Length: 379
Ligand code: ADP
Ligand code: MN
Ligand code: MN
Ligand code: MN
Image (cartoon, rainbow, N blue to C red; front, side):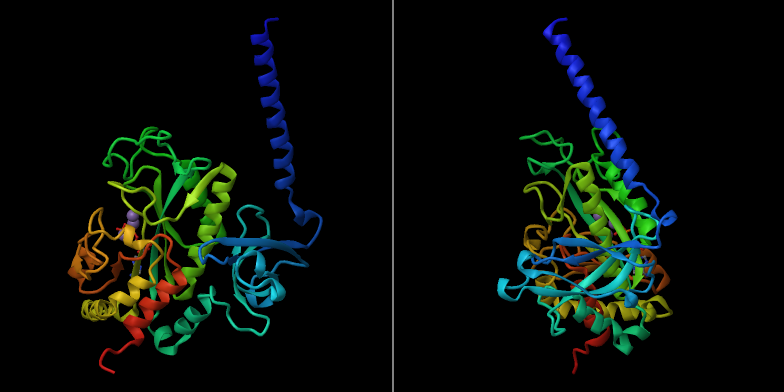
């Protein structure tokens, strides 16, 4: 046998071996525990020190739980997540929302938590506590605020930090054929996107759709309409699931608002919003009043809409300039867009196009609700 053929045999053998190992692991991962024990696994999820990284760890529960109030509080080492000094490192997790776990299945759950000091004070990266206050205000509750969050994201080749499908050290052809495109030279990473779509539906997330984006390797999913704080809880859980799936695929998830400089679209998180008054007769007038209030608070909102957003909001690539507030019907170059249907029917919703892909949905949704529902510029 030539050495060439020996190498070929060896390579085949190694490949078969890896496949057998993967199958053996898969069998264990799929094991249905419910035949053997009432115990279930709860994966506690929280936001880390950067305000955008998601962390998680798991614990065993004696029996299935469906109400977060029945779940035990837990703790973690905040000095390892950039959230507490080493000498007083304990941070307390408060379970807030439960989702079904698409990875472990069965009665196993994902638990979205927020973080507190042992004395019960929200730590600085906990933006949920403040949002929960806004969304439990009786005036806000009465208005049933709905959100539709369009999360854009970019898939990167892990070791080179360069978009999926792009030639290493080079660029694909100019934008045009990629948005909602099909074909091996236009859509990069669709299996990840579809796996995520199904996993979110399984989890109980109100995911309303997915689409390929203008920049190749960039995709979008939408959460909503979801009511009040549930929209942000769901978006964080959907981000977590996406990062777990990209981990399996060996691909890197980027929420950078402008991953590639130059003539390439950035990534946003358009926030669609309506209140009960906006959705009923004469709602368009309520929408216009809300937009006027958003204009007056443009600077405050921009400051809270995500890190690095100035690289994205240039006035090009379907964005409005970061320093200029504008709105318009069907205008994708405006800060706020109102849909044709809303104008025609005289009621509906509007889209805040300013938030960046890396925004914290607790901050953005609560701020839009506070400005448009609670704030009176004349007082
Ligand atoms: P775009 O045309 O900007 O790409 P998408 O279809 O991607 O819009 O996303 C729109 C989002 O707005 C969806 O998640 C949808 O469920 C949500 N939405 C629809 N109606 C309302 C409403 N009345 N209030 C808030 N959100 C809404
Ligand atoms: Mn969209
Ligand atoms: Mn989009
Ligand atoms: Mn949009």
